[in-house]
Image (cartoon, rainbow, N blue to C red; front, side):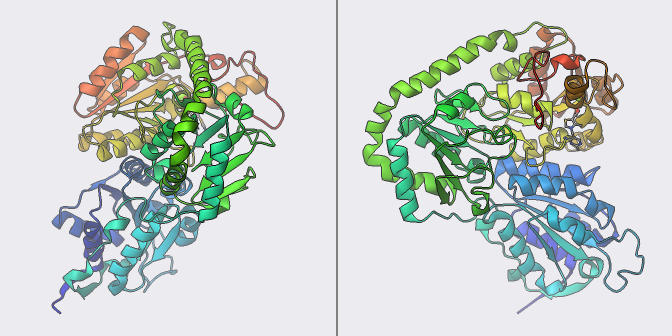
Length: 575
Ligand SMILES: Cc1ncc(C[n+]2csc(CCOP(=O)(O)OP(=O)(O)O)c2C)c(N)n1
Ligand SMILES: [Mg+2]
């Protein structure tokens, strides 16, 4: 068998190509130089990032939008440790990712090699699996393993740790060794189903329920099942509420959408309290979704469908647990219920009409907020403009903190699918800019808007250079409140007016900052100018930064409540 002598770095590159890997960001170091050299020679879509954390955030958003495996790389030591925050986002959100990390030369390790650390121990709890490469000839096999683990079961990030001597060594590989498994290029790689008896019982419960509600989490998108869930809801006239990550399980504009539930809600929490069956689908029922474990209320009848059996009963005990893939299981339920479907749909008309009525009443009550002429500009006005102007195939990326809270509650997706991309796995701030980059790369031609706080934007400013270098087209709205606003609003609530500490930022004009970096910048101070700024961003080539001047009054910052009248209960917080 003829073989090609090549470096370990080139073998790694050829495996990324074998899996038709998408864009990859990283920052080099000596250990991975053979990989960088091969990436150049073989024209890999690989680029320098300014902070490895941003590389993983961009890979995360790319994977969330495309369903394909996100890719990133880092050198040993500080490169590796900079990955941690992004890896945990991907781990908690179930994002498929393969991340290449250089490590020290095994001939010298633990002799105070420069930048050496116990990086495997540091990275291990931040990812689904660490695969350490100890033999150059095993690179193809172990890379196949990395893609398999990243895309199977509950997807997640896999770190491939490559010592310097493996990356720089050479070995004769046969060309046919560089084969990927197409099934593991994207999620879900493989689907599984609950046992048939459980599915039958679930169908019977659904058929009998007269006030059921489906609670959709991010697992719907991990299963690529939004169309299936939306079709199922339609067939049974079953209202759907969603978590921040589950937004888009059904179009927010659909009459069966009950909107966000949990910490912030429109009408969903009341519907859940009144429901005779709560069908939880691909949702971990964590703190924010359950309003610190008070939604659904005690005694609710719960049917829980999830891919991860360890999630059953972790926060809320289900009456029946369905262990399986969302799309496959909902498809099976639809088949079982098909003979009764028309009758159920008919029977449920008054209930769904009531849901639509409540949503219409909620909308009528917030029209003024969506169209507010307030100066400084209200965040609700921004949401009104986005709902009007962002096309149905548009994508809204939301940074941690207020950006996700406001948009989770008030932004409307217009079709099923992942049109809303928050980083709720870890809710780190700083996701907005790299997240926009990843989304733009995943969906060329679709409009991408991102919301970030000024604090989150400050963290990632350097990546404007990356976005410009790659000429990525997106609009990023910097919510300029000259503060770590969420923290300041909480201080206002808990300690009173004026009792703020370490939550103010200095006044900054982010449009000028953008321009100084060669990027289009538009400062918007009046609500009437917002529409034109967004349209300019959508039409523009390359990135656009909109510096949106909002209130500096911490009494007016929280989205769901008027916090001048809100009370903080012991052991809880308004978030
Ligand atoms: C990395 C990280 N550090 C701290 C926090 C806690 N935190 C949540 S929201 C917030 C305020 C962020 O300020 P900014 O990005 O300006 O958003 P704003 O709340 O002002 O809209 C902070 C510090 C976090 N989510 N992530
Ligand atoms: Mg801020």
